[in-house]
Length: 81
Image 1 (spheres, rainbow, N blue to C red):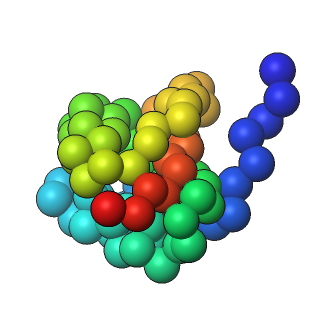
Image 2: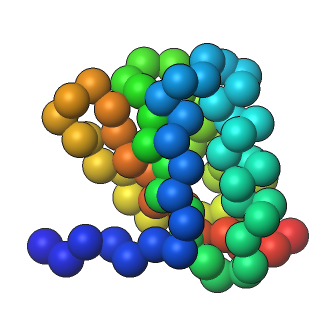
């Protein structure tokens, strides 16, 4: 399966909620419409909350990948409101 091509990436594995979403949102805000952000996050609360919050902001969730090391990578396409 082909890897998703992304424009920027952010690692929020060193953050805890609610800073995980805040850091992801700031990174998304810096992108142009249609660009893709790869967000690396820890399992648990970030995986449960960050994708939901980003979707509520109106952005498109493309894929959530289990990195099999206790982290996940979420691919998000920025959508302008």
